[in-house]
Length: 352
Image (cartoon, one colour):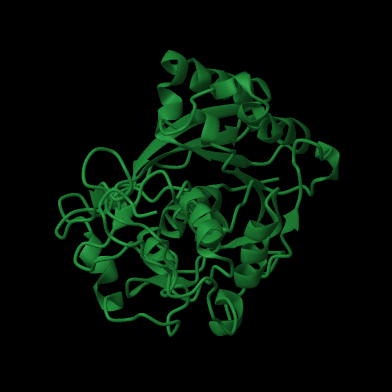
């Protein structure tokens, strides 16, 4: 059956990528630091590892090097096995598949820093907006319970910007209050990612929590790219003639045809000289076409827009890869937050 455009469906050149190894093997990237001198990090709801990569540093993106940060990841956990496969392929952190709603808090390792991009689907403007009324919407309590028992120096929660509007702001206020009640002062950083070099329209909230007995607070990062955003072609133009797996995941893209009108498939075509549209986890909900080629954006192109280095391989079929990419914290944004945390921790005379 032909789509309403009358054109035949376009098929992906390849269903699965070809690769010899992930970031860990191809660049000698190491997630492990000297644990005696590094700040320990526990990563919950880690997904494929975007925030973890950012916190670690030591990677390059669009010819810029992001320095190694002084963090040591002591554990990474997520419920999705394929995301954990991607995480371990690239970061070699021995990440574990785990339903954190069922894991006793006492069984999780103690760390100085807690990070967690708790599930955003019930808080997203493109989702069902069920908020905290669902079991998934209550998963922020996993972070709260860890903070109460293990008392990390700093905790970082990450989520979508609609969280601050949901229920007229009640949802975010409730989460902040829950974190404050277990002994933390809380700030919410609203990060408009293009102002920090990300080539797509994307805003995220970072809920920064510092233990009450620690003086001061990390400084909100200063924007670096105001009025000089990185546009979509700046990130993708060198990929335009590549149709094979010489760069992993570049041959993967979905069957999709352009809709003739309305909000159907293909209603968003990227434009030169502009930011890319937000890369989403639901690959069928919004179909992004290339700004000059007559096809959908590839898995690698979407990973580029999320600031993953080309050596970071997504080893699964396109649908799952796109879900992982869309759910991830862009590594350069994770690095931005990590830098601010490290500066703050380095300034403390005594930490415990």
